[in-house]
Length: 273
Image 1 (spheres, helix red, strand yellow):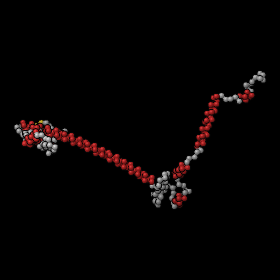
Image 2 (tube, rainbow, N blue to C red; image 1 turned 90 degrees about the vertical axis):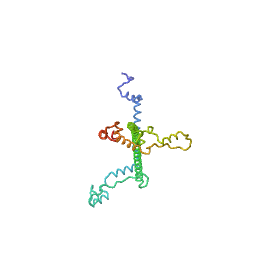
Image 3 (cartoon, rainbow, N blue to C red; image 1 turned 180 degrees about the vertical axis):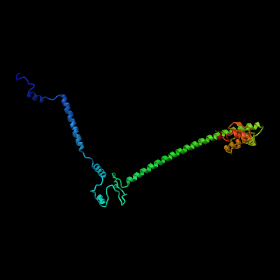
Image 4 (cartoon, rainbow, N blue to C red; image 1 turned 120 degrees about the vertical axis):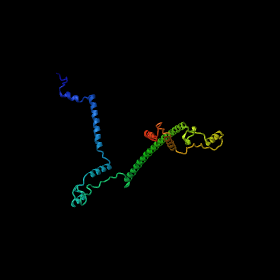
């Protein structure tokens, strides 16, 4: 081997290789390491930033309140001299307070008692809202009850009217079968089947006249309209049961009073349901 040729195992070659610029991959890794080291330094510096003074004081106060009173406290030492030991209650019999009076930290700028007043006002508002909600629910229940009552009364009135008109027709048929020319009571028969009276003729004459007056005339009141329809129904059904032993709800005539009382459930619609 000549001196001009390079010896790859010699130190000279290694020294020369250190001066060679690094490759592309090594440069990327070095750049990432540099960025990461900057992040680490930034985190360390941010941790060194101190908290605000108020927060530090509050944390120190809360931490101090968590600690129990030690025997070094002058007040506690005085209690010990008077025979008090840790865990006992205050007082001669030892039934008093065992823990110190809690301290309420005031953080706001309001005057003394403001927080208590605000809390009371909030409670009053909540109570008012609760009372309003209860009143609204009661009104809804009352309105619902009144509506159902009106519907129930309307249905009952319709049933009473139907039974009354049915009783009138039955009464007219049975009376005519027994050679009655007119009803025992005028409203026992339907109006269009009753014999005409003087009042009816007067009404016909009035209907034939020209009603051109400005005054409104009231409609003629039918005989018996001043009596509640339930009372009229009770009266006419009583007549049918005693005179003909007939029950409008059973829809049949019985042989006699004993047969009626034995086989008929009762003298009203409720008994037949």
